[in-house]
Image 1: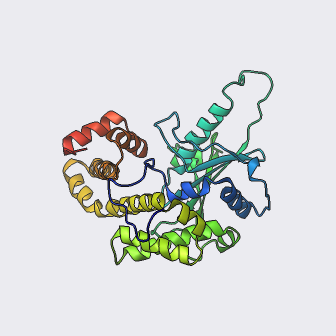
Image 2: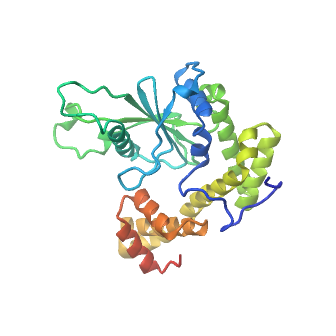
Image 3: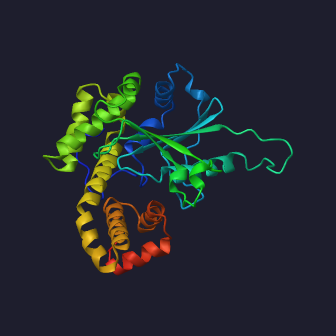
Length: 311
């Protein structure tokens, strides 16, 4: 059993997968996932065995991962948690959904004269980043389209909408009130953020865990998964913090080699360094960086070579 105030150091973390998150770990449990579903849909289903969880751990395209996806009552739901604003979610969810449907219906004849019925997709992002964001907001795939004269008056041939739910502070209290797990999760994240302002992140995470357990906030989950949650949280918050710190270096480098290219290069270097720092293999770090920045692995390897990163 993990001892009180045990702090996980780089290189001593449990065997977790890079890009796993506390949110994914928490809601991979069918009972908690059904609780969240009921909260979102104002329903009261009780049989979590009816959920067909099909979360992508390694999609065909770019090795991408999503947080939680499942089919329930002829609907395909994709839940994603994010601490940063990402207007590219419609494109990502399009790829996720296509991959899930391809794997589910690969043995069906799509050339048949009989129509194949598919679950109706629903896309939700739960946002709890530090940047101000509306209580709810809808991203549309069509917002990313190149616009030609007259396009505004015509309906897009392909549309995909992603509903972003802000779970910070007093936002969307009705959803959090009816889903204690989601409310507790946001309480935990808020505590880590608050404590990290005055103490090292490892201590902040450990203190937040202790306080949550003492106040019956995610108590069973944190007691059972403490070592993994410590490692995941330290990684998540360090990554978020270092991405903010590196922005100035990215801008300075951008002046020399072009702002967009320079910022991307700096972000990639930080991403790979953080992954390796927390025990991720060189190969997996490159694979996930390619996923994150939508570039090839060869491009990542070239940047690493130029930056002389020791892995």
